[in-house]
Length: 333
Image 1 (tube, helix red, strand yellow):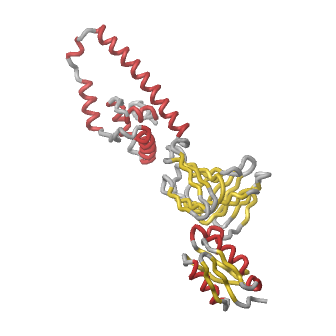
Image 2 (image 1 turned 135 degrees about the vertical axis):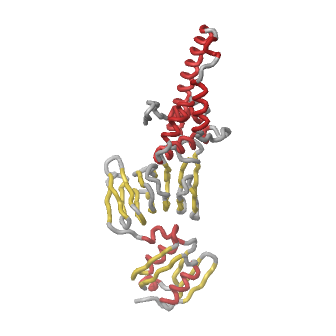
Image 3 (image 1 turned 180 degrees about the vertical axis):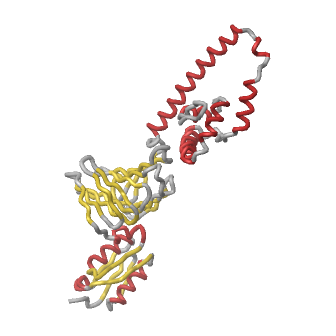
């Protein structure tokens, strides 16, 4: 990262500028360097980290003209050329000492930010008997299922976006950013994406990852695999090996999308999917109702409307008591 004047744009120079300690030559070099979009993006990430570390300091803006005028002023001869050379030497020594200390402080700040960026102000979200929608620092969304725990930093660092699913299940809708991959850590495997929608279910025996949109990388200490939309990975906790299936049960994330699709499914499976997606229970007056099969699609319907439509389709009736629906009728042979 050099320009024609051989001033290399490093993190230390950027932070020195943000601290108001950069020389005019350095400010001009930084201004030229920021002409590239990718450099501007990197600068903004460093600036964001600086502002988080020092919120009381207002962001600085590059003023190339002011820096150039200041530089020209330095190049003009002044009466200072005739001052005591001994005093000038002492000033020069002290300046070099101060500059060295500043560089050490800047390096320490950057190292601290990079090491601790995932440990600062950790947020812990735990659910019990209801799902919860969580907005993440990059505008990504996580919808936690019942009895689930998600850990994430109050803000993401300049190099990565990382969260931890400690237990349970969550559906993620990740904001695309190719420069900052999004990583989900679990006790069985890690998932890495740049922007997509997928479901992660941490179970006692392992992990299941199913992809709704885009592409994800699932990896363990022993194995790794890319998953396309419409595929599912199953990882056994005992072996950490990944088995990929070219299919998904879209109803498994119905708790997050409230979209349910049934294609000639027995009522036993239909009821299980509905009870996962909605905070209601469904009872049957006759066990033969489990033998009935249903083909239907529901998109963000209320639970009451959904159950009534199913009852009408199968020639059943519905009784409701609190959070419990009871389907009544003869059922199917």
